[in-house]
Image (tube, rainbow, N blue to C red):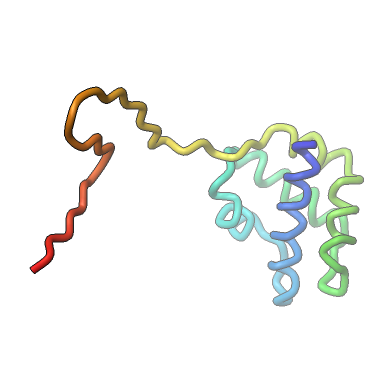
Length: 111
């Protein structure tokens, strides 16, 4: 299920890049996958595998997704990438009166 979801995300990225007439490149993928945990070597391999699929700007996003999901090489790569977790998790326990603020407290005074 997760690789299908990632395949859908990847097909959307590929479609967005190609609809402008651009070629899929490592830098484009790196910028668009910055919210995912993926190594540079995996990114290069993914770009190569996507370019081997011979995707064109005339293909629909669904057609691109089907080609990505059907590729064994991309399936293996997609298994290794995960969404990045947010590093700002704050767990607090509060008892008593007063505010329980995890970061910056902004107050607006009426004048």
